[in-house]
Length: 369
Ligand SMILES: *Cc1c(COP(=O)(O)O)cnc(C)c1O
Image (tube, rainbow, N blue to C red; front, top):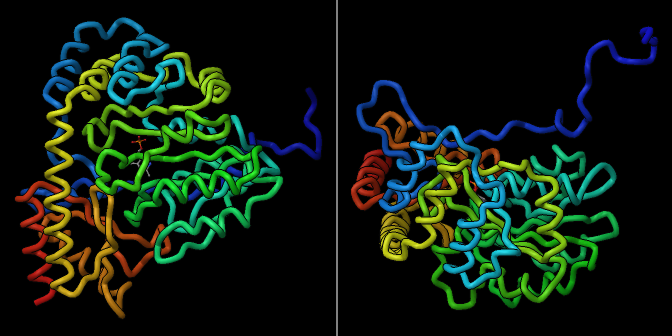
């Protein structure tokens, strides 16, 4: 073909991807420090289920073979553990992959994807990657405003993402309000309930979303193995949804999107009730302690239902938070700055083991002094 004046002379992406500011994960290392306490990525400080780790190692003997593209054994195990129909489950390379596939399949140029103002950043990035326009809805008290979301939904709204509990705020929406949201949204809008921290919630008014999904054709729940199951390195997540949505996800995903070691480890992890209970109880105990000591030190904490707390650094918050972060880093304690979420006066601190939390609190005490 002969070059034409009105064609660009290099390949050009669609405009959406160029609007993305790449996701910056939590810091993992710091120079000149012997021991690093990593409380920056909401990982499980107790590691993973020993049965899952053994299954991962055993999978090393068959690396030449493709994984089961249908993830049958893992879907069976999830169905068994959660009381769900395995036919309505699809697995992904992290729940991030599922969030992004939902955007690609249900939203594109001309469409909008709604999230709450301090909702998980991946919603915005996945919407932009798909060519859709992300719409951010202001929150009340760092909690998603259900009525504002309903009022903002219109003909262009293809997806509403809601993390429940939300990261990074830790706030939770009770089941009755999730139902009110669903009933207030138009039927053409897919509601995605991202329950990455579901296993940590102890409030009886909470439901991760499975009950609502089972009743409807327009609602999906996503879950992850990265948090309470301690398998973040393997990239494993899943969605439970109505048959038509699961069918679409199975069409757009890669045929072997989940690796064999991830399938093997996940199948063990989901069934290890003792490990899950230990991680949940340890988190609840330590979250209460960390929150209490932070408050005593003058850093109010947003009531959290996850494995992290969001602490406010006072009137001079943005500067104090930055200084605290730098001080902690020198001591090898890594936590998460929040400017990317529009919360510069806050730091997000993942809950570690009792020992790790002790080191964090001791370092913060020195910072205050
Ligand atoms: C950590 C997290 C996820 C999980 O992502 P993976 O891709 O499964 O590791 C999803 N949503 C929220 C809100 C999270 O905090």
